[in-house]
Image: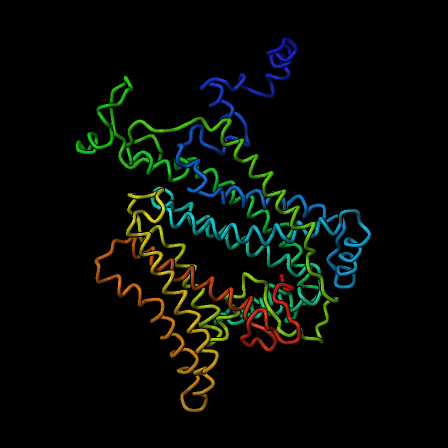
Length: 245
Length: 255
């Protein structure tokens, strides 16, 4: 290593930030994982089999990437949006025609949302067909199913926000299904919409759910989900790898 | 401690110099109860794989977003119904179910049972053996493929026949609504879903094989219903071929 790099990496400032040496040996490669908040959700070591593309297809990671991309583009969209039935649609039009890269921003948010739903469903199928729900991973499977439902909720609540004919009638049809639930159905629908029809109250509630409650839930449960993957010994491929020997 | 497992798990040819002291029974960590493993350090390989995935996903979405615009129709108008009025695509399976029986049964009870079953899978099949292998073994793979083919044939036939000769319309006034809208569709659905299990039961399956068959029936059914509702339903929510929709209706405009 050149001298000046060593001077920097030996400084007290650098060492207060990175609590490990250059990761070219087993100890420091372990410390990278355990002393970094983003890396620490990973196991320190993984089996070669779990890295095989045809084992996991990287679906869980892709879902997480979609979520990150959606948070980022969603935040930018919030700068240009107001959830009122008089102005929401106009803001979308303005975004698409006046704001630089506004149309691209909205497209990316939309397609990433659809991709996330598809990828999360495929991830569920992958985990099922590889038997990765088996003990000790039972409860992480349950968390995963809840995350799938939250992903649908995130997509569904976002669907209303452009306030065009497509959004209005899709949410009208979609929430009418909730009304068929025996007993609590009609009450549930009124609770969701803030009234008997899709209007300003529904837009306000869907907006709050879409930008706050549902993403927070996804963030929290994803953290638990990833943490448990590591606590349960990484991907289930580790297990079969050890059994094969 | 179970002595026989010691000799099973740890091979004598191991080059490791330490010796086995204790086996911890049923502990949820990957190192316990197993022999020398074939692992690598997560850093940097996992970080690199994730970086490549980030770049790939961002590039694919950017590419798609440059080419295809997100749909935007006229401003919402509660007085003017669109035809067809469709839910978002991932709920089209539910909307398609509504066409085949009483809404409470089709859109609430059956989907809830399905979600409940999916949540309970690990508790119904709790044998840890075989985790981390696609379909567990060759028999599991062939069971899955056969079941999927069965659903891919029977469900479209059911959807088509039930839409062409709907029992609840033909039997209106002949039988009570409860029978024509709940009992008959309920029985038909149960037979379609449970038939593979009855066939499988004669081969003395284990819990994993029952799960494979039941999950595949439900999963492929959900796909068939979603695709039918999304692609094959046109104006008046009637069945059409996707490339032959009346009035120039394009299902993909609903994305």
